[in-house]
Length: 387
Image (cartoon, rainbow, N blue to C red):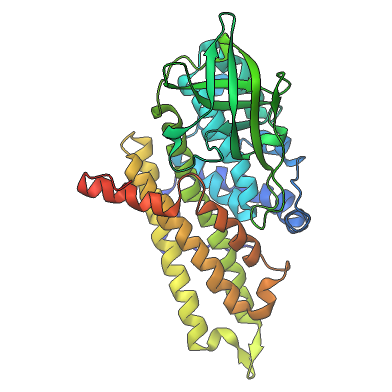
């Protein structure tokens, strides 16, 4: 039975509603994700049947208003949902993060009333899957250099270019694609599956996020209806606001991976005996467990405070970057140290450490690399951009 660490009684800072929401997601993860995720990660397959279930439990667009199919929840509740989903697997949380922060959020924030009503309820229920197209083969940390372009052809826009490392792309029904117009201004387009000239090949041979669908978005003279342009944003501000929401969710999500590793390591250390006593009785194992718990506790307080700032609309992009960077690094180290406690058993699929560790190698890079987030903090401190 999973016993989540809460050394500083952070639960006392949560409302009853937030705890109920977390419990519901936790029970779903235990029931629907945990029993199958190791097999899917091993086989490099995505459990597609979970998408509808995630819609049913409110994992998609939880902070989107109920009018559009969301639950109208606060930002701390969103964070708690991400924590529980990533305890199951980063692939599951990634699917929810993309659907919520990178697809539903921009449609809600920058879309027209018609766009909201057309797409958001289907995305919230899991009937439709969404993807987010920003990163390109030659432009990752420098999205402003994107080459994807569209031209105004009178009755429609003609879109050309390619996006890479796109979660959900092979199964996405709609993709929020960021491209430059004829004046070089970045705009958002809603590109639907089946549009002529639009393909989404899957990316295989990954050692990380193996239970997640990753692919490309390729546009070869794709005719996009004019009503599919997001009308209420111009420039990189649009995609960067989406990334802020996604990064916030990641900062919470990776806690789930770290807590899952810690819980498994603690239980194992109390059961595993060497030299006629539990390995938990040895100083070096206690050192690992104590340091892991300390780092998890610091990360819990960091995201709780960030969540309250988000609720008050006070959180800055730089604060979000700090939390994303710190917490992913923390979770990756926790996975590694927890694996050591288990010795050779830690590399098997009987325990979650190696799977979380491999996943987190992607999480530490996507939605802004580890180094870029450090430089965002540096720029905020000094006022000087180092990139």
